[in-house]
Length: 352
Image 1 (spheres, rainbow, N blue to C red):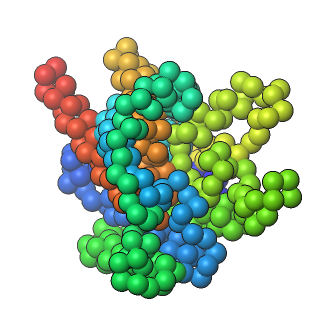
Image 2 (image 1 turned 135 degrees about the vertical axis):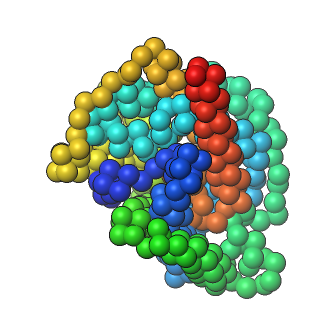
Image 3 (image 1 turned 180 degrees about the vertical axis):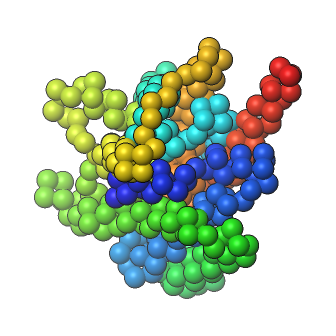
């Protein structure tokens, strides 16, 4: 499924940072409608599976009762600003890497190192000792269906069906309200990417779920780094991929859904780029270009882990669970990206 993601993203130019930049620079909302459509499809699919009892949001990292609001906000801002400097988020750089962009490979390497450091290294110590200490404790899970079910006294599956259908319908209505939202490429990117996210949730939460693991006799989700149900995310898995490569001879290191997904996105993008004759080698333009990408990659690695996800991890996978924390992280990422774009405009004006 990750290869399908890479192929669709390469063909449709699906990019969250690009969507925001198009609005700021050209007042073009086409790619934003594509992204919102992907969110709508992911919400609809995820909550449909909750409604029929296949999965539950509480099995993911996004829906616990503890909202790390300072981590989500600060990490999201760092990630959003960083993705502007690095010419795209983690998923976009994976797609660009498959299409021959050497800058993207450097970004992915630096992002992977900074992400792993924030998971288990020096910046992890700082993260745990500072922003992770600030949280809001809820009496129940933070996903909207659970909160709604608790508030009005209905079952969570029914609440998921109602909330998912209502929100997805409203988002799709906004998408198709303008002619831009009815273009075939918008639907290829939006519906295609959203469906991939839903399918990965199904693979992880349904196909890869064991009610009773034969070794531990406990509930288990196979081949996930979080040991819970996972969908696509493009920051922490890069760190785990580097860990797997560097310590390959360690028998305790195993391939996970996230690691394999990273490879799949690159392969899918490469195949599509070759098929459409869009594959080309590209390197850094100058020293400032190099510095911007290195700084941006570092900010994305640190910010993405701190915010528990990126534009895909929180902006699609997390938001599909209707988690309040994911909504906060996504808002912070957008604000960070807007700040980054304003910074770039200021730099251009100053140099001019």
